[in-house]
Length: 81
Length: 166
Image (cartoon, rainbow over all chains, first blue to last red):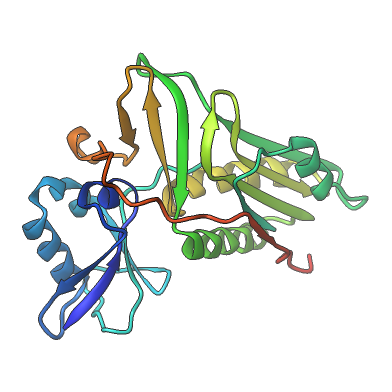
């Protein structure tokens, strides 16, 4: 399956896209996605290691399964306030 | 009540929105742009957010604060876009019948916002370099590759009145 991933801040600036498509096997989870990103973008290894991921605007756990229709976002460590 | 705005935060206006005859205490916290961080000089900051989720998380935090403390009114305003030194990036105003609830809720809100709300700041340093601030991430991954980068997600000025019936 192919999921669409929203990117922000350093992840977006480094990759140069606000949204990317990621190919994953069926049954993939947040953990699978994280590993795929670290493989594809080794220069962002620690960012993806520490990032949270959101599904439909809520934080998801590493073992949460993904689906094509989800709005998935990479949330690197935050610095608001 | 939650507001995400690209406009200057007017602290008097923020205060006036949480004052009430039912409140004997009003606490206002302002987060402002600091010039020096670990010896490095900041010229300005840029803030961006994941708009839909930032709004949702801030609304959830307001509701959690209202469950933990007896509050009369809550207003959280987060500034987005470009900020010069000294400008406020966030205002948190809380009112309650007695002061302890307002002080504790205000502190809990800013501490928790800094941990969970998807908002990021970029430091524009005096030496011309820039860094996204992602606590814990190695420094060389925080530097944006400027020129070809797409524009940040536009965080429109918006506010919504979601005050609960307290």
